[in-house]
Image (cartoon, rainbow, N blue to C red; front, side, top):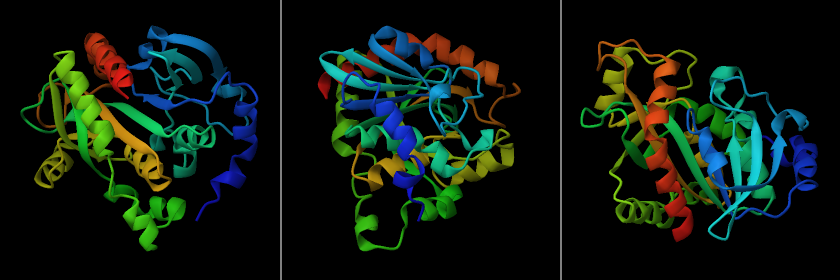
Length: 273
């Protein structure tokens, strides 16, 4: 197993020296959803490029900041700049924001992402709460990260995603009158988009949305006892379900269209926590 405490001691200590408070909720912003960081009161922003061993964010829509913010009397750590496998990073690097949050005594993680719609009933602009996730593509990496052999580790996934946290997000969607889909989020590591044949396979195995993030973050968070839930913005039809060629620009444009609903949903969820 990788010892993240030893590997990232300097990173955590550097962040801890600068924070204005210990966060209660960590929110990881997905592609095109980074504007949420500007919709709350930010007390302190730390450029991740200034932190030792913190990977450089290379993807459009991921700006590379840890924001320490407040909303509805809740103390937040907002990760604006996710770390992805397809950027060439390892699993230990991809879960670094979650590791930092845990070491700052944060116990609630809300993961967000842009995803392709596999379920034919989903359309671009829909929001989806993850009812489950598929991490079959990263079993080897997860084993090296958290171990998968002990009874304790297996039992730690019984509340994954968190039933309590997911129920609060459902309630938030009802109060805000926002349509919230539910389904299985399926991870592929990239760097290319999935082929139509791969999407057919994912559909047959029960996947409703597909993306290149989130699952390892959620599993790592669950393994160390953090409550975690995930909201996907369906930004496009998955490969083979539309004649249109997939592009990151389409992801950004659709996320821009739905950002007001996304903001309302996340804010109301924070209020209910």
